[in-house]
Length: 187
Length: 111
Image: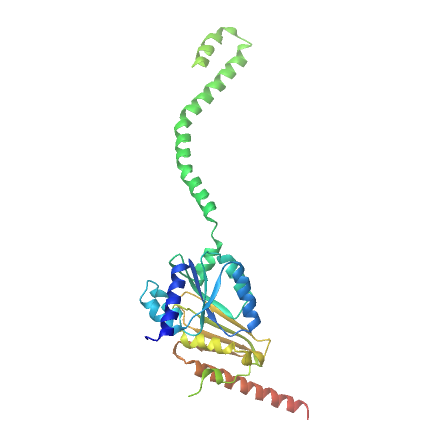
């Protein structure tokens, strides 16, 4: 519609989608006002904002943007939990205490996730930990190669050392064999 | 035409309600609206012990409303081809029937 208010709301929604990394879509069943205020408060602490949306405004906007696959989510009453950061674990913890809000799905960093996907995302290790794991995995192969290459000569050295030790132990009895044993040890 | 939010349902004989749906499917509108109406404070006020849970899946299963009654009965409504009003009236009529049975039983016990 070309209603001015509708255009304003539409622009606000477009802005929300543009400025936030995490947009979670939840079904809103009526809940007492004070619970809503408490929930908004806890979410604000993690920089998550609660936005009420009207389906008539958001549906045409989504169908023309890259978020087409979020369209089926917008029936019945919904709210959006938006944040420029991706604190999914904290959001899930707050939502667990509010049974009247049901998480349906989310769009995090332009990736559409289902509810299960959001829970898996929350369980991922941090970026630094993942980078450390990757570096460890990459370093594993060259270290295996170098130990393989050195393995042969290391084994030979060990065998020769053992041989010398035994000869020196036997030398206590016969000093004639000391010369060849010493030339062997020099290499 | 009746509005879904005006339908009165007394949840006294109900133990729990589980509403299961896949939000990314296209046939879930009536089930989701049913969930919204069930959570209305007037209906919730009729029985504070009744647990209403929403089970959000992503496996293409069809939308389902599973109602467990206090006397062990179970009502399963497959929401794919039902409207919200039909589901609410079905639940409401069963609850009323059970309530009437309870009243008759208690009247028989206390002459």
